Amino acid sequence: MGKFDGVLLASDFDNTFLDTATPRRTGCEVPPVSEGNKAALRYFMDEGGKFTISTGRAVPAFSAFAPLVPMNAPCVVCNGAALYDYKTQQYIETILLPPETLQRGQAVLDRFPTTALEAYHLDNIIHSVRPNEYTRQHEHVTHVGTVERQSLLEIPLPLGKIMFEEEHSVLEEAKAWMEAQHWATEYEIFFSDRTLLEVTAKGANKGGMIRRLAERLGISMEHVYCAGDESNDLSMLAVAREAFAPENCVEAVRNSGATIVADCTHDTIAAIIEILDKRY
Image 1 (cartoon, rainbow, N blue to C red):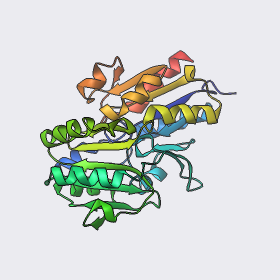
Image 2 (image 1 turned 60 degrees about the horizontal axis):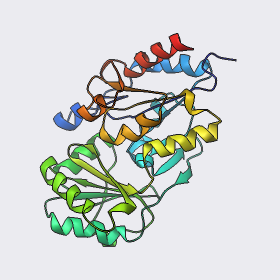
Image 3 (image 1 turned 180 degrees about the vertical axis):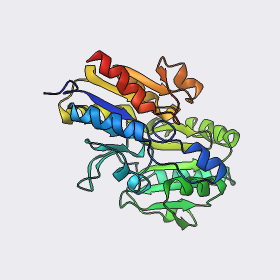
Image 4 (image 1 turned 90 degrees about the horizontal axis):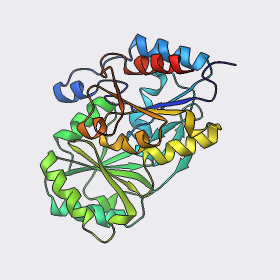
């Protein structure tokens, strides 16, 4: 029996576990997983803890990184639209976008003609419409290209999520327009970055899928801890016994009451495990 038996720690990946904002902004290479985080995670798991990544990335966009991260639980992907086991390479649970999303998403593209879109198909292909500089930045940090389409209507189902890419001010207008539509109640609409506006089916969020994962693992929510830096992490932080956030987190996360720890360039996860080590 280890001291962390029955404990689940879930962390966002981009800019919580690893600094990818700098590579997106500058074009430099994505840094390696820190030795401090890896050592702390090995200790945590050796003592019985379960660790997973809970990311907005689709399965292929995290595939190059999954082998580099010490994990012993399935991953939350597509911002909570799916639970995926990288060891067996199988989806465990999915919450799919309704078919009408193709027409509705295309209406957003028509109304905001400078906006690009990525669509995440469950056959592990990422499609794009009108890719722009933000699409290319995203491809750089995920190490995965997209299949370009002329229209969202050409993209096959099923889809886990779609994501609009543009300057923040344009995406704010797009978000407000979508939220004013009669169909808005069928979706989760949120920012995962100032230039990335995401859409998943209602109920497909990180918090909901973390609950499902904990239930599958037989872990009480009293022993679930989560870490994240962005607005798309708020649902996950809200269900945790204690939420953690790196110093570089956005204001909404800071205001949520999360415990602030070292930023994503200074072993965020190791800092969290040090706190848990004193608790258990």
